[in-house]
View 1 (cartoon, rainbow, N blue to C red):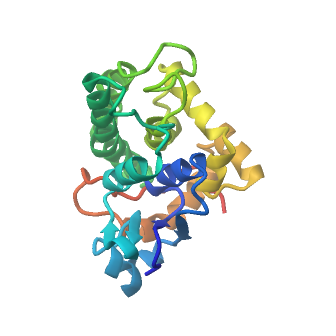
View 2 (cartoon, rainbow, N blue to C red):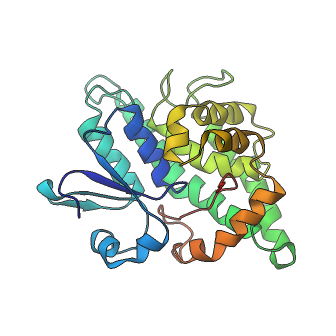
Length: 264
């Protein structure tokens, strides 16, 4: 276990928005980032710091810290290291309503939107004949009629690329890009151009390519042809390895999801 503050990260999982937050705050010299594979999650070394065997994990041996729930990791980093409040509200100057809204939206994304979209996305990676068409249809309808419209109510403005909380990008926008990316590949953002444009804005940032481990050429492909047949085949090859890293409960915030922009 590294002695100083360290984020243990598997690219293209829920740890990627946290890594992107670190990059935005220029914390690469302050917080070490250890990039792991799915196989690394089940090693003794990782299970010592995160007994769930999932991503992310955050440790600081000097402070006796070892945490792994994504919401806790993100909140800790923002409260301790975002001292100028670039990516989260200043509790000394914002209203109680603004603070409650930020915390509520963070939890809504992590515990409701992300696992819901993740479960649906993983299910659609199965061969068509093995998919539950009633579940897929009902889940897509729920996203379109409930989850996406609810997210829309939190937008700061109705500008085409309007962020969720501030008039500028915040940690919430980095966080929501993870489930929105899967929703886009499922064709669920066609009726929500504001969400699609916000996702495109986050994906266009250099920090997105770094946090999601996407090479330059792949970054372009990820934005333009994320749902290609060839790419889905590549994802299916990883499905067995990935499934072993997914907890039984589909509602936990540390579900690991292969993305259709996973170019190797």
